[in-house]
Length: 279
Ligand SMILES: NC(=O)c1ccc[n+]([C@@H]2O[C@H](COP(=O)([O-])OP(=O)(O)OC[C@H]3O[C@@H](n4cnc5c(N)ncnc54)[C@H](OP(=O)(O)O)[C@@H]3O)[C@@H](O)[C@H]2O)c1
Image 1 (cartoon, rainbow, N blue to C red):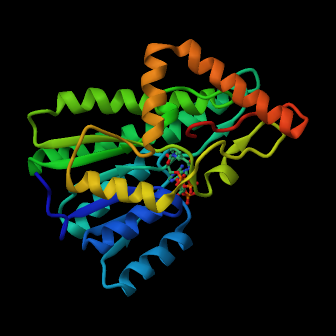
Image 2 (image 1 turned 90 degrees about the vertical axis):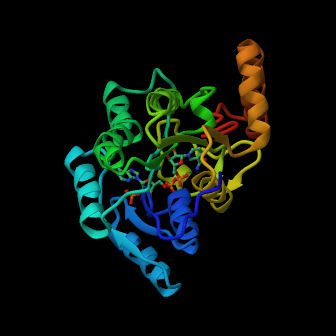
């Protein structure tokens, strides 16, 4: 059954750019009261101003999701301000382009702290609130790379596999609670992701193949908020990749190697293929 979004309260992490920003704007257009969380406060202020100018309501809570007490403050501040939390959208994250050999233990700890632990901490902090309410919806932004790992993105892919695992467990554990859990798996999306990502490859990394817009992914998230479903892979052809990988990982390995070789041939260099079907 479709949910009425008007008047709901949504927390969006990673709301200062890309998918998170577009999701905040799109939800605010549906008269959802949005709470914008990320580290860059000036960016959050600008987005909140845009929302208010359009007649919406927005609260900003500068937050580093890798710091547990920041995440707890985010939940507490939202409750003090709005008195309820209907939607938690765990979207904050960044990429790391490096072969496994180039990836350090510290790299892995740092990226896990943001992409996985950030979502985990937010879920732990919000669940008591949603339990009291007897309802709520948690939407975790993973990636197609959380379904089939990409070369030169092993640590990043691992964080997204972890988000998928967390979402699947939680969804079943909360099945009779009134709290819904959804997973969003975007493919390559045109955001600041590729510029911000840590890059050990020594080369510019850009997406390979079709690229979605952040607005498209935001629309998929709003549609999920309205009609909760377990999972959405936002770029339809990527679904075939996930199925093919379940049937024949060897064939997907082969296709990825071909793609890397093609790019190397085109550039006359050895390259990290960067993000294939999704980053
Ligand atoms: N773009 C793609 O191709 C793609 C594909 C699949 C999945 N995704 C996933 O989609 C999500 C959004 O990425 P995007 O593409 O929109 O990239 P983006 O434009 O770089 O946005 C990333 C957001 O995460 C925030 N963030 C990063 N580290 C943070 C931290 N420690 N604490 C709080 N916020 C933090 C950033 O804000 P601050 O820097 O202000 O903190 C920013 O708002 C990520 O989880 C990403 O893995 C992206």
